[in-house]
Length: 637
Image (tube, rainbow, N blue to C red; front, side):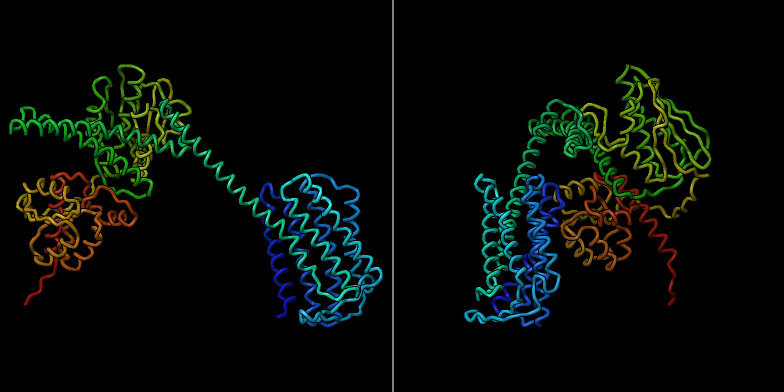
C-alpha cells in the first residue's frame, strides 16, 4: 500500500466516523449545529473515497466518473459550511453567503454532466519521491473556472471565522486555520488537475485537517459540559443535604418522594422504638451488676428488674418483626394458611389490644357465631391489634375518651372484620397515602409509618384484603377480610407415645460465641446441650456419633455455609437427624436464604428464641419422626 492510498483510507474513515458522531450528538439539546458539521464531514469523506481512484490504477472511465462525483461532494461540502455558520449564530444568511452556497451547489450538480466540467480524457503524472503515478481527469475550460469558484467560495467561511477569531470568539481560531489549509490544498489540487503542477493531491489531507479542528472543539465542549454537569450535581447534592438538615432540625415531615427523607423518617422511628427499651435494659442490668458487686446478692426488686428487661426485649422483638414482615411483603411471599376460629382469635386479639390502649378508650367486640376463616392466625391478630391501636391513637389525639368497635360477619364466601372508631377521621390528603410505606401523620419518633403498609401486605399474603371503608369527622372504619372456612381442618392423629419435654439431647450450632453461650445456658434446664461454633465443627461431631442427638438447633446465617450447607450435608450423613433439625434466624439477608427458609417454614424459629417454642417444635418433629418410623415397611429376615 502506498502512502497516498493509506492517507486517503485513513482520512475517509475518520471523516465518516466524525460524521456519524456529529449526527448522533446533534439530537441532544444545545448541539443542533452539529448536524451541519456532520454533513461537512460526510461530504469530505465522499470526496476522499472518490479521489482514491486516481492512485489505485482504476480504468480511465472510472477515474472520470469518480472525479465528477467528487466535485459533487466538494460542492455539498461548501454548502454544509455555509449552513453550519448560519446555525452557529442562529441568523439568516447574508446575500453573498447565499450566492456562494448557490454557486458551489450548482457546480456540484453540473459536474455530473459528462464533458461539461470533467472531460472523458485521463492523463497520468508520476511523483517520483512518493513512488506513485496519479491518474488525472482532464478538466474542461469551464471545469477550470469551476475549480476557481469552488476555491473562492471556501473563502466565505474562512473570512467569517477569521473575523470571529479577531473578536476572540471561542473555537474560531481552529475553524479559520483549518479552512485556510483547506483553501491552500484546493489551490494545489487545482494546479495539479490543470497540469500546471506535478505534485501530489493534498485536498484529502486538507479536508481531514479542516474537520479535525471542529471535532477537537466538540470533545472539549463535551468535556466542559460534563465537568459543568458534575459541578452542578455536586452543588445540588450539597444544597439538598443542607435543606434536609434544616428540615430535620425543624421536625417537619418529609415527603416519601425524597428517598433520603424516607430513610431518615424510618431511622427516627426505629431508633425511638428500640432506644427506649434499650435504655431500660441498660439501666436495670447496670443496677443488678452494681448490687451484686457491692453486696454479693440480688436486691429485693431484682424480679421486677428482670421482668422489665424481658418486656423490653419483647418490645424490641416486635419492632424487628415488623421490619422483617415489611421485607417479606416486598418480596411477595405467601403465608402458610389454615382454618381458624374467628371468634377465638378476635377475643384474644381484643384482649391484647385492650392492654395496649389503656382505660381511656373502650374496645368492644360484636361478631356472629360459628365464624371460621382461612389464614394465619398470628398475622391476623397482628393486623387487628395494629388497627385497634391506630384507632385509639386517633381518638386520644382529639379527646380523652372514645370507643372502638370490632365487628365480624360472613359475607358470601368471605369473612369480614371491621374496626370502627369515633375519632376525628382521616383527612382527604392522608387517605390518598394511607398505605404508603414510611408515611405517618404521627410526630417524628412516634411512628415509623410501617404499620398499615405492613398490615396490607400481611393480609394479601393470606389471600385477604385491607381497605379504608369510610372516614368522616364522626369516625373511621377500616375493613379486612379473608376467605371463609366451613370448620377446622382435619387434625393430625397424635402419637400414642408422649414425647418427653426434658432429657432430650440437643446439638446447638451458632457461630456467635455470645449467642452460643446464652442459648446453651437458657436451654440447659430442658436439654442436654452440646454446642458447636460452626458448620464444620457440627458436622465433625455428628460423624463421631451419628446417634448421639435427638434434635439439632442450627443458626441460619454463618460464614462457613450456614444452615443451607449444614442441612444438605447432614441429610447425606444422617437423614433422620436432618428431619429433626430446627433453624433459628434473626433475618434472611439474601434471596437464596429466604427461599431456604420458605422451604422449611414449619421448622423455623425467630430470634430471640423462646424455650417453650423450641420444646413445642421439637415435640412436633419427634412425633413426626416416630410416625414415619411406624409407617416404614418392616424387613423380616
